[in-house]
Image 1 (tube, rainbow, N blue to C red):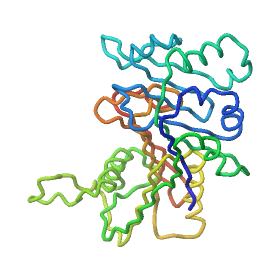
Image 2 (tube, one colour; image 1 turned 90 degrees about the vertical axis):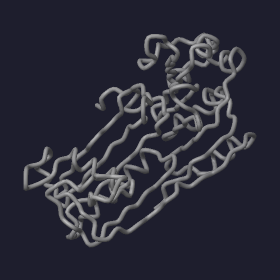
Image 3 (cartoon, rainbow, N blue to C red; image 1 turned 135 degrees about the vertical axis):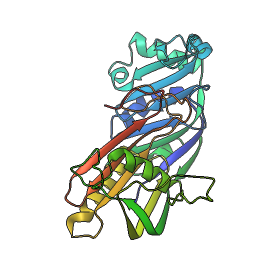
Image 4 (cartoon, rainbow, N blue to C red; image 1 turned 120 degrees about the vertical axis):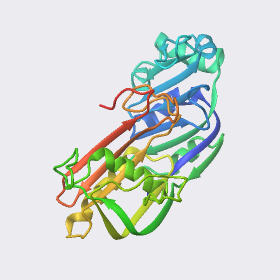
Length: 303
């Protein structure tokens, strides 16, 4: 299934994302996302462009003061504030390009404190040519990528027994949502589930009650994937049960970038120990579903 493309642009000046031409070509027409690549959220300057047109910057103290932009201290700086968050609404800016606000931001990015990043970019617009972004940034070093797809088959896999009506689980009847999330993490990490005495790497075992399935399929898609593509995948998974199947449920897990400046909606994201922020859909064969959302310690609770 087509899940790309996305693009990698080397040393792209930040001011390119606030130009009138970029906003009109990509931000206003469809869904456009961007994220700085190979930057660490807890120590580097980072930026993200959201599909709603918000440009979110996480800046160190010196850079923040040099830009002269308005923002607020990071919630996860500790006692000594070393990081600041700046949010710029590109949709609002584009309404009045002669405003003092736009001129100040443009001057800041172009002259006062020019910032350059390696960016991941993706754009979805029905009917538009996919090569538009390649030609738009042709004066920079730009590469087109397709998400990597890996499919594996697992045999005789121990699976937790689930019932859609028992979200919290029920002793000797069904496992709960939290136990399922742990089990999925073990499966994704290729962990042994049998808790054998001579296994010194992992003592994890499948939660009970469980059942052994003859075959299970794991498909992993890795890349910069837009929400529209994820929705398409989810729709396809829901259709899986249009015809009777032996499988009782299927899952779709989405892992966010650990060093993104945002996680849920526009809430600030921090790394702490692992930078986790993810969600998981469980679709049952009766078309019921569970939605699980998880974050690390340096995050607001999901909505």
